[in-house]
Image (tube, rainbow, N blue to C red):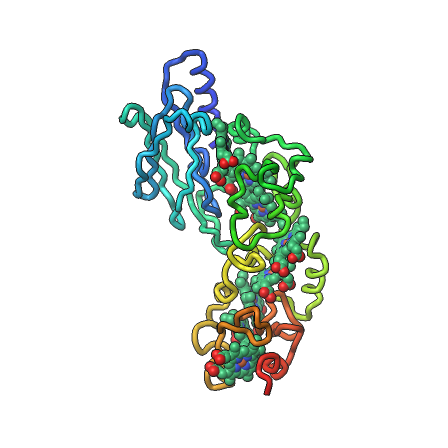
Length: 331
Ligand code: HEC
Ligand code: HEC
Ligand code: HEC
Ligand code: HEC
Ligand code: HEC
Ligand code: HEC
Ligand code: HEC
Ligand code: HEC
């Protein structure tokens, strides 16, 4: 992977001295043999000379239209870079890029990558490595146009137009529910700008990070007599996105879907304890939660996702079913 990058850099340097023009073409991100969790970008880089006029990108057999990179406006803004927002298939993706000059294919680059699909329970695939962007070599490629050596003042800037991380990562927080510090670009509250060899690694384990700012809540979760399985082992990220999501509390999925991911037997009709006892199953979803009219009825209306005083983790520290029923059913 690293070798590929070096080849490209050396190649450009040689061209500066008027060497024979071999069209350079490289898939920078995600590069061959890596796996990625998110689907944000596909970053391709051509050479400076000869200028590649157009490209087509094929992902798992689906080919893009011809993408024209030759206009002066395009060259002025992006030079030899092409940045796309692809839609990956879950699992393996075969990427093939054709580059054109004068309507003819002059270069091709391929990469096999693995897309986990933003699923924190997905296991990392054998034979694929994680992708690491913020190494000195890769950052060097972006430095001509992006600020890759931000100082402390710049890193603490709270708006997208001032914070240097925003120029590439603003889509990370482009969702309806944004986590406090990510929304104001305090990325370095969690990502260490001095980590080595790659920068911006998280400075502590995710659970330790969460506890730093949500100290009271995390203490309260731990004080529960019964701590919910994944909470007890610090796997907050199995349910929460640290940046943003389409759900309140930055949940990775609507509450019922989230819970069903690990408790599918409960959701399959008949298996939830509440059934058996009352003859017919209690609804597990409804438009309104009578105990909290702003919300809909979900698993979280009866169970506390972090823990409780009884084994069934009822909300509000309740331990008896009767008490639980009475928060919604008045008689
Ligand atoms: C020749 C200049 C140039 C170089 C070199 C360059 N970029 Fe960019 N990039 C731009 C411009 C211009 C934008 C648009 C900025 C904006 O919209 O604010 C951009 C935007 C982006 C975006 C955001 C896309 C979006 O709309 O969300 C990403 C991601 C990105 N660049 C990644 C990279 C990476 C990674 C590198 C290095 C491997 C790199 N760029 C190198 C010029 C460049
Ligand atoms: C030139 C564009 C660019 C800039 C500027 C940038 N990043 Fe990135 N960063 C990327 C790309 C591309 C990736 C890989 C794709 C992804 O995960 O979104 C990445 C990945 C990361 C990762 C995952 C680990 C890794 O190295 O792959 C972290 C963490 C990160 N960036 C944090 C930051 C922070 C914090 C800032 C601001 C100080 C920042 N980035 C600025 C382009 C950029
Ligand atoms: C509350 C802490 C926190 C804040 C604030 C935060 N991150 Fe993260 N970020 C994380 C954690 C935790 C991970 C997962 C790292 C891991 O699993 O190794 C992560 C992962 C990432 C990744 C890798 C891709 C992914 O989604 O897993 C990128 C890129 C990233 N962060 C960029 C940013 C940027 C840019 C900002 C600022 C806008 C930011 N982060 C703010 C905690 C945070
Ligand atoms: C740098 C401080 C900081 C860190 C670290 C941090 N948070 Fe937050 N978090 C905040 C702030 C600020 C808010 C918004 C104010 C609020 O609602 O409390 C917030 C809000 C939240 C909310 C939404 C609260 C609500 O009522 O909707 C959740 C959920 C959350 N954080 C989870 C986490 C998780 C999980 C982690 C660890 C990955 C984490 N936070 C790490 C500062 C932080
Ligand atoms: C099994 C999934 C799950 C796990 C694991 C989990 N949470 Fe939550 N969390 C939720 C749900 C669901 C909500 C929304 C509760 C609501 O809407 O009343 C929530 C809400 C929150 C809130 C908002 C305030 C509150 O208490 O309602 C914070 C803060 C929070 N979680 C932090 C954390 C931290 C820190 C961890 C790791 C120690 C963690 N969560 C682990 C599912 C989870
Ligand atoms: C990442 C997997 C995971 C997710 C997501 C998850 N749980 Fe759990 N849950 C567990 C594990 C592990 C246990 C402990 C199992 C055990 O001890 O038998 C547990 C235990 C429970 C228990 C106690 C069961 C008992 O009798 O001991 C309840 C109730 C529960 N979860 C409800 C929920 C609800 C509600 C949600 C959604 C907010 C949820 N879970 C999401 C993994 C998960
Ligand atoms: C109307 C209230 C209510 C709702 C909604 C609800 N539960 Fe329960 N749940 C209960 C009660 C009551 C028990 C039985 C506790 C006991 O054994 O005393 C229970 C037991 C459980 C248990 C432990 C025993 C078992 O049946 O395996 C799990 C796990 C569980 N629920 C998960 C869920 C999930 C997941 C959802 C959402 C799909 C959900 N619950 C929705 C009230 C509810
Ligand atoms: C968080 C609120 C909440 C709690 C707690 C709760 N329920 Fe319900 N219950 C509902 C809602 C909402 C409905 C559906 C009402 C509707 O659809 O009109 C419902 C419906 C029912 C029904 C009628 C079933 C049907 O399909 O019409 C019974 C019986 C019932 N609940 C019993 C109980 C019992 C027993 C408990 C305690 C173990 C309990 N509920 C706890 C909210 C709750």
